[in-house]
Image (cartoon, rainbow, N blue to C red; front, side, top):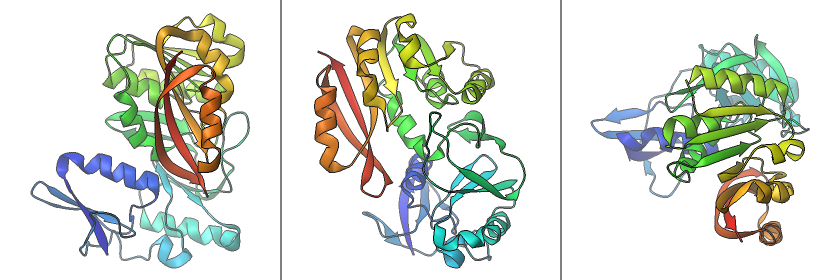
Length: 312
């Protein structure tokens, strides 16, 4: 089997990135030797080495039994994508997931990509009970209901990267804030002066407010509403972040209105390589693009790009 050898201080961020990309091997245990951590991966990667690590359980993994190589763990809930060809086995998959991870209280099957106005996945409970949980990440806590609000643990490494874009004394707007992972990160891990978090889904907004209290965020103001209807009431900002890959570039006018003359904005953009240039050209009608960063593949041939811009 293959592993990555990393320093202890880099282990957590490496593990989160591997999970985000679907390369982490959940069937094996992490091994620590002095200041070195050996992280299990499910395929050969650059800088990987061969080393046997102990199994997390003597029970067979979901990949061994059903061909399922990756899944999400949100707090004490597992969310697993089950293709149509093995959908009839979903009950067995749920039982096996619980056997492999005894602390889990519920297992949900994901039927497809997030969709609809509130970006919600279609989930079916296949084992256990309850859809509310608290997810821990970077010493922060995020309460959510996986059926009512969108939250991805795979974006933990991207959230860490965005910390570096926030400058001291920035007034920041996070549009489409969801349950609040980015506002909480910015509040607790940067020197931002003030953060406005906007979310339209009332259920997600409820958890946004909960998470601001849970993490003692005193410089974040939550706003429940549709960005296109309320943007003129928000004031102006040094930095605007739009973590909405499928439609962020539909809000160029709104961002232009609320951004200070020397302000910056960060767009999450979903695109294949072929159409990316057209989307960048659309953004350049309002802004100067200063960075384009390719992130994970979110569907076959489609990637999430992070695009940073400045005012023209």
